[in-house]
Amino acid sequence: MKDTFEDQIAGFGPAGALFGLDLGEKTIGVAVCDPDRRVATPVVTVRRRKFTIDAEELVTLVQSRNVVGLVFGLPLNMDGTEGPRAQSTRAFARNLGRTLPLPMAFWDERLSTVAMDRDLIELDTSRAKRAEKIDEMAATFILQGAIDRIRRICE
Image (cartoon, rainbow, N blue to C red; front, top):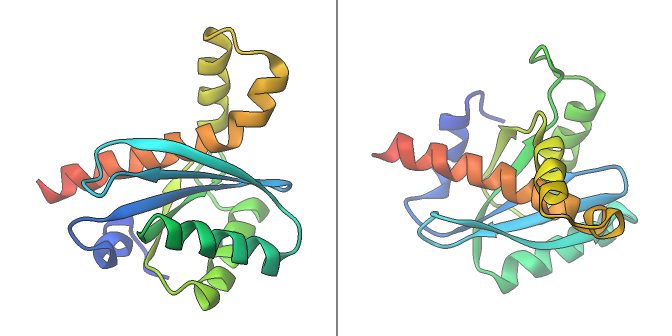
């Protein structure tokens, strides 16, 4: 995998929808952006089962939305180092790349879930509804940050 975000996004091309993925232990939050890469929106929260089942579900989602690349939230430690969760995300991406050969990038996701939880609380969203939507909202936060950066790089 390439080192910098700028290197990683080189394979995305100038346009096309991207998926943002927030990998949790029990769920995968999925978000998509428009082909012009302006706005990220939540798609779904996938309940994790076995890798092959999860991968098949992601392939179906990618194909249905004509996605050209994937942005994974990378859960770095607060000091910027990679711990077990980041290594697990990289391993999932490597394995998914065998089934779904799309360009992939990693975006620092520190505090993305916290930020989205705060937003949902401010909107007076119930605890049950927050639990149901938090992963896809975190994926949206991750993807929006990434596409904003992509736009700045390409300007």
